[in-house]
Length: 418
Image 1 (cartoon, helix red, strand yellow):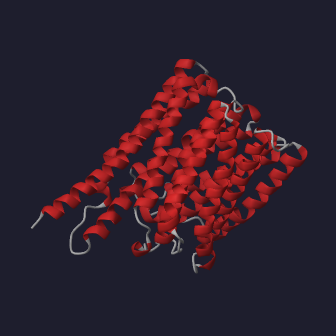
Image 2: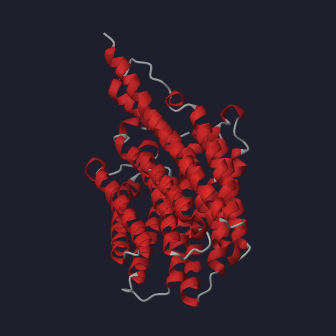
Image 3: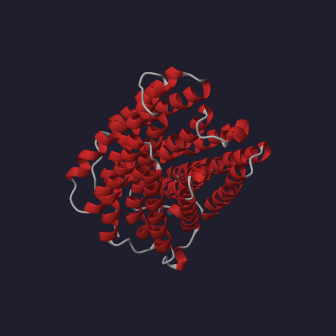
């Protein structure tokens, strides 16, 4: 099991601000569905649908990925992250500003906003790469873990650059086949960035939190090494020959293998560690496998696959880890503020299992309503799914605030002692 280097961890406020931004974006996505959900779930090309998709991919998943990366690399991977104190607040502001401009541009038909978001967001990804990649290249040991992060960050930067080209194309400043470029942009972002990062982090956190084994190093190295080549081949076929079949097959196969490995490892978890985190991962991987199977069924299953994967499965898995990290950040804050010689409340006391279970139940309700709204389109069903989404992410946000409230209460108690 990896040894945690708490002294190398950044100030807790930096990853926390990213992690607390994620549920706010989830609540905003719920409001979009409540306002006009039936229309948004019928087509992937409507401007409001693009706004909804990016509220999830950037607002929810993006903030969670940024925050987790900044916390995980120095603490669990032994990688120095440069400039966290100086550039960290700018990174958070630029990333979320770019997401806001992009989403607002799509919603309001504001071309300048879409273009501005398409410029600011790649700059934010470049800043993240500049802060993390030098340390990853120079760090020793854990080569497979470091290679996974390099691949994920490179894929994220490539997806952001594709997104910038799409913003130029949408504004009429760049003549390209936008549907094909959109598919390539999405594939590098979802598979190359999010799933590779989750698979890399999972190699450490699943044994740490769940007591599971790890995927054999050779198998994960083959999966990781072949993935960029397969994505590149799929992108070439999609852009050069207007053929999406290869890219669709790549997404489905690699997502299925990722989900299958996760489910196989989770089945081996010791019974005492089978709590809300394991259940959220199990449900998430199951729904991701279902999304991949739906994608294999053809283009007609594309919307359902997107809803299952982007709207439910990946956020469910990310959220399970997000809650653990927020609780851990609260404990680190107490450790640094109070120092040694005082018994601190454990992470499970700062974020009780009952709070996690409430959040999980709300998300399971969403997992029923959102696919139903796609399969049987109706305004009331779409708005019900939007309300469930709003409440589910509100629950996540309140659970995170509960950690801050409990840590503050403990600090005040200690300071009041003679």
